[in-house]
Image (cartoon, rainbow, N blue to C red; front, side):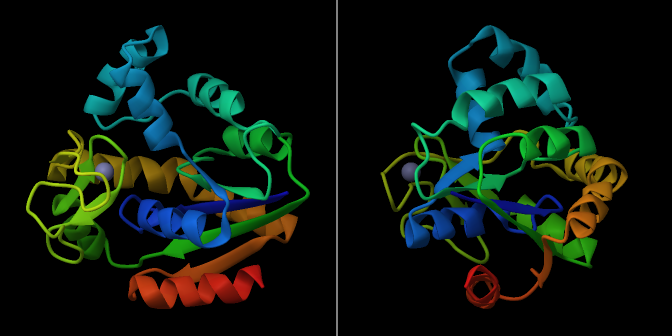
Length: 211
Ligand SMILES: [Zn+2]
């Protein structure tokens, strides 16, 4: 069982890339963003707790995230492999993830140097409220405005995709998440991919890494 860890700044394309890899290789995508939104939507106790944190553009605590992820990473749910999207975000999470089931681990760092690229991408992003598919008014518009091409669901902006919250997420990302680059580098499983280029080029590079 292969574990792929996709990480990079908000807006680097983790959701889009992991969605395509899931279909292409038959791996399970484990997006903490999706898992959290499911919890919030179901009004679970955890969901209520995380709602206020997300709306402020802050990160959900390690304990809560780890609990949510552990529920999902089980050999009954996963056979070929799984792709982590949005997790780990901290060293503590990375160490916890290392204890979870996998035979082989590949970390892929989607690198975007220019912050303006990230902010513009996130400001024009919309997400299906039913299946979680991501569209972008500029780069990847849906066929019909406001409607998901895949399932017909309604496309919505995330409440935290506004400039203030995005800048706060980038600041937190640099402070907390960037050290995990070193963690995976030390483990010898890190691959850097320039994610400011087209999705097609990024996928080609990732294909080479996985082969
Ligand atoms: Zn959809």
